[in-house]
Length: 102
Image (cartoon, rainbow, N blue to C red; front, side, top):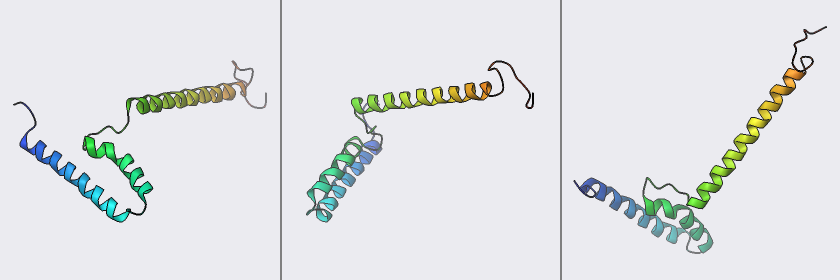
C-alpha cells in the first residue's frame, strides 16, 4: 500500500478544516485587534499546518533549547558536587570522618 489511507486523508482534512474554522473565529472575535490575531496565528500556525504530530520548533529553536537545557543540567551537576564536597568537608578533614564531639 502506497500513500495515505482514506482515514489519514480524512483526518488531515479534519485538522485543516479545524484550522480554517479557528482562523475564521479568530478574525471575527479579534478583528479590531490585529496584533492579537497575528500573535495567535504565529503561535498556532505550525501546529495547524503540520497537523497533530507537528514538532513545533524550528531547527534553530530546537538547538537553542537543547543547548540551554544542557547548560542547566551541567550547572545542577556542579552544584550537587559542591554540596557533596561541602558535606564531606564539614565532617572533618575532608577525607576522614571525625565523630561529633571529637
